[in-house]
Amino acid sequence: MKKNLVAFLCGAVFTIGLGVAGMTDPAKVHDFLDVTGRFDPSLAAVMAAAVGVGLLSFRLVLRRARPVLADRFELPTEKRLDRRLILGSVLFGAGWGLSGYCPGPALASVVTLAPGALVFVTAMLAGMAGYALFSRAQAAVAARASDDDERESTSTVPS
Image (cartoon, rainbow, N blue to C red; front, side):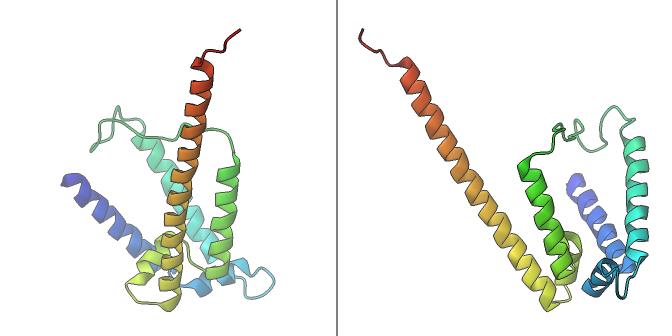
């Protein structure tokens, strides 16, 4: 229960921060990306502040032996850039640039029933479901191939 309450409060603070920073306004994102027109650099300041707070927070938190509300830290271990990471980054950036929303601000904007946010969140959820289906199908194909390889290696071949 305590973990859920802390997660909810962190999400609420994050949502308020997105609203105060103007991140829930797609026009602000478009103006940031429009370097030859109505360029608005304030989004860069918001991002720089967020990165700075994140870097300092991680340095402080990771000095602890373990998290306050968990048994251990769960940090990514993968170090290489693979096709999935690069393709996902490109899709994220394209979606952000075209719609003016990324997942956090879009979810925060859903409560206002903004049509763009509703379309974005619907498309995001459909993409997540599609990815889950694709991943399951890919895992099933890999498992079948592994089973076939195992059967071939254990079968006896008459000489």
